[in-house]
Each structure stands twice: as C-alpha cells, then as structure tokens.
Length: 208
Image 1 (cartoon, rainbow, N blue to C red):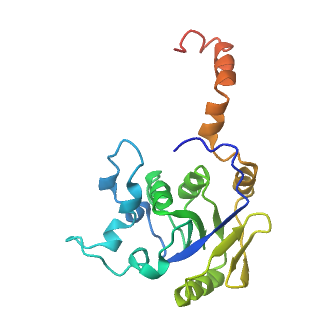
Image 2 (image 1 turned 90 degrees about the vertical axis):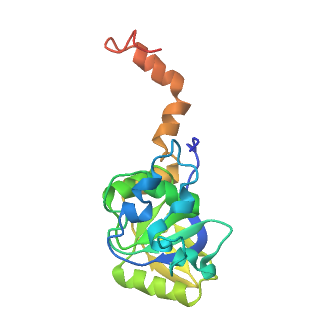
Image 3 (image 1 turned 60 degrees about the horizontal axis):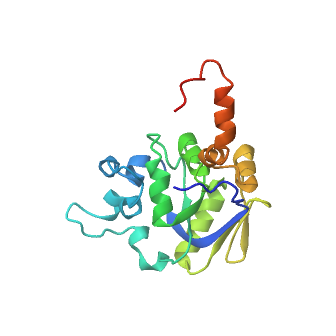
C-alpha cells in the first residue's frame, strides 16, 4: 500500500460486524493458497474464504455473507480471544483491510497480528470479555448503526452505550501521531537515509 505517513488516526467510525470465535487464526482469515500473488491487491475477496463458502463455492452462514452487515464505508470487526493467532503473515490484516475492516475491537489479539495491523494504520483495541459479548449481541440485534472508536478517550460507542477499552501505549501513540507507517517514514526521509548510509564506512560504496 502507498505511504500514509502523517495521517493521524484518533478515531474510527464505521458499521460493525461481529466475528465470533476464540483462536481465529490467520489461515482462517486468509487461506495460504491465496498468498501467491505478488501484491496484496484483491485479497479482500478471499477473506474468511473457507468459512464463507463450501467446496462448491456455495455461500455458508457467515456474518460476511449476511446482508445486514453490508456497508459502503469503513467497518469495525468485533472479535473474541486471541484473534489473529497462528502464522505471522501480513496477508491477514491486508485481506481484512481490503474487505473493508479498518479497526477491530476484541478480547485479545495475537502479538504479531496486532503489530501488523498497527503498521497498516488499523487500530486494535481490547475490551473485557463481558463487554465484547454484550457488544456483539447488541450488533446482532440491530446492526444498522455506526460504531465509534475514540483513541483519545479510549472508548467505544454503539447505540448510545459506551465501553472502556485499552491498547498498547506505544501503538496508540504511533496511531495518533501519524508515525505508524515505518516504511512510509523511511521513504519520506530517503535523502537522510542515503546521507547516513554514505557516512557509514561499512556501507559506503555499496549503495546503488
């Protein structure tokens, strides 16, 4: 994805979608057979492929196939324990982003998945088990409302109810300061990087 360095993320507002289940791993989020593409383009259509469709391509009962959760703008997934566990594949958050999920609220997240999300500008905030279950039930009851995540007040709001959430301080700072895209920062500072490389005796002469 192109550099977004400098885009401060203080809040995300979008239609919510509940993705129930503990230990949902990255192979469920994006099966390995779809990871052969040179770029991440098009991965969104394969998000949760094996849980959304049977071997004959027929749609199964899954929130991503439910028209009640259709939305034109950003979406916020509400998940359970250890979401994104398994392999370290960056394709998992890339597939979610391209499907439309721009933030997640959950009980907990696998560390590498969490860091991959933050590096893409996707906030992941944690709520208590009771609050996540309450929020998922409220969404399933009446999903036609926006859910808001506020990284300044560390709250989630849905249908007038407010839930306290938390996240890693460093990740929160990077998102709010617009410094979450490390690659973008390096690209934007390319001349300084080259100057530093030229000053290093063990690098000088190897730069193209």
